[in-house]
Image 1 (cartoon, rainbow, N blue to C red):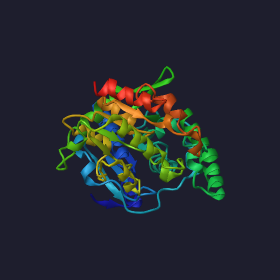
Image 2 (tube, rainbow, N blue to C red):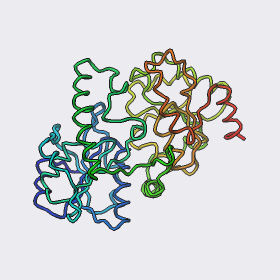
Image 3 (cartoon, rainbow, N blue to C red):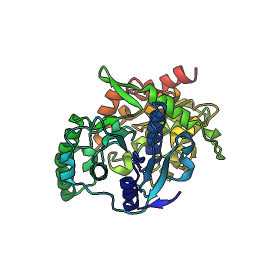
Length: 376
């Protein structure tokens, strides 16, 4: 995979009118979202040419490599490493000029997970003023469905200083929200994600599901993931390390589940960004510390799916159910609310995904569900 600077890419966008696509990713899940969009556009007869820009994650650094890419599924779009730390800055004057769509102009697609990165929106629109810019929000995970990126929330405030909170409020909640609301009203912003809203609830986007499963099944890996087959897989999120969980009660709950169910095949797949993975050693089961693949891609490579996946609010509790029909269970209602820094943290997850993920209110209810629905 080659590296390019934004200045080099900008020059190509300016000089080559055939370039009509830029995507930006930080994680393997982001890559899958962008690639699924590209396959969707290809099916619609759109011929894309351009780049997927791979940038380092602000917490974990570079987390995307050649092994997780599926370039054979799309043509003309090259994944490249963005060889610089500074990305395009916002240009308010350019953004203000985007007050109507040029319906007769060529379409230029800019795809980004979760939110519209306005620095890129301004830079591309300045390079291609006559094009019909289309900003497409792609899959980021549960954040797409539970968080507003332009609103101050507890998720941003944990670990942030007063100065950082104030800066976030001014930039994201006021400035960015104004521009994105304006762009959306004027028809510049769209989305293509795994779930869509219907009658007040999230349901599968069949176009997305069909295409992402097609992509996921294209690669063969030398790694052996057979330990996941027929196992109870524990997929926790970053509650403890991120400060939302004050104690290790999650480990106590997982231990109680093992004890209640008895002997069986158990496996822990820690969150990719979790630093202290050995905290799960108290569960006395295999801890898979490989994170070269997203969980979704791993599941696609299995000859037999896990018996079920248990977690608290991880994205995989939704995606495993939506994409592969795997039974998933959330333990979040079993937490003592006194040990949560935000007592309403799980409310959005439970209200949105209760039809895709089983959310018991007691350990007894959880064990009964697994014995009745999974072990029966």
